[in-house]
Image (cartoon, rainbow, N blue to C red; front, side, top):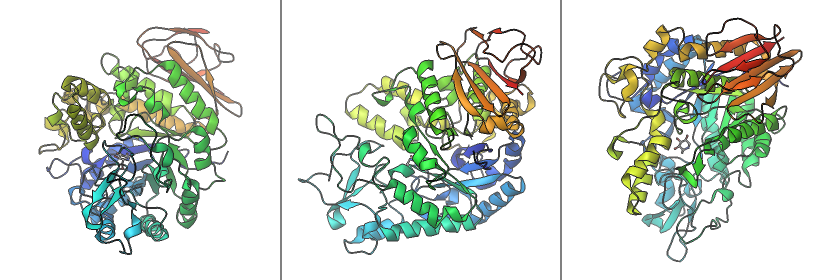
Length: 558
Ligand code: NOJ
């Protein structure tokens, strides 16, 4: 297997609005991030993924970009950004920027021109279609509810927006548009960044016939089959790689809803020359029923099946990313662990589960201190466009307010977006002003100052996990084999590289299950690398082990 720095790295995602506010306006900013770089250095991460800091009217918190080459005033200036990059690099931390090129803001100069007339030279930078029978060109639903098309009076046509109506989709069929994007990417790489996280990048090639999506009873329906992993997607990404990425030693991760392992191999195999790794979503759907808001319990069997599928399908062919939360997902300890009694144990167990697999681990800000979901009492406390649009649409359909809030408490994106809890002072030390989104009320108990001071904290456990990755190649490059297939509470897997074997055992529940260790991990031979409970000795005491609630152990046999 080819060795690469981005395979050996751990990435930390910063959602800048919620990270650290330096000027008391209630919004996180670049000087705030700079002030916390030493904290990240202590944690030991290698790369920062910075969610968008570009000029934006903030309809979707920066994922609606109105100028790709300037910094939003809320976050600071370009000089602040340059200082941030310099300070990160000085600490040996690389930076990848968020590349949002499936769509721009409707306030981007390109769109202002494009909508002005049918013969404007930038008309084809976006996707314009005439209406059909006095209605939208097709029945596609937007990710943020309602039609994916918006009528524009100026030219009596509709434009496509798979996300909010202020996020018109860019038209990748236009060579001129592609060139603009490549130039912009080159401009950032020349400023010294180390790569990109690419927002819904597998949506950029659409079926240009724009067929209706299948679905009953009229209304709007999910047209994913016509734009997820669309007809020209591999051609587009390969071209982007050839024109831009191949000229730099950079890393790329493509966010790809709906990607299968087979597709992921095509996107990430070195021969394809497209992207280095993808964010897949299958494990994020394990607790969805009929759509995201229809919550069903996830099962260990399904999680195991999913992990095994992704680990083994990409082995030796492509590369995985490893994550269980980000700015769009609930907090992982609340979702897959126990955010009450066993918060600390289960957060460490989940971290172990992720970091010992093959792939590049991503830590979402606050994960390293075990931040949890939040349950705001009223819809008025929420800010996220997805939550607000969904709520409005459902209330109009007669849904019950309490039921909607319940689903939002479990699945809403604002769970991940509450400000980072730095200490136990007002607003968790995030701001001296009024935070743009309230701080989780549990900040007095859960905060970074407390975590730094406690050697047994989740933070220090993450530090150890990150260090182990630097010390043992088997963690990065080892082959993966799932074990304990039939176990109802335990997940266990093995990694092997040369003469080294690593065994990771995780109890996903609050009981005390037993398990018999497989050969050759027997008494006296395997060394405990890390575990989330104090252990008596360095070696395995017996073949038959009993795990404590949410216990995780990792053994190395060298
Ligand atoms: C995925 C991003 O992660 C999410 O925050 C955003 O709303 C959509 N893409 C649209 O850009």
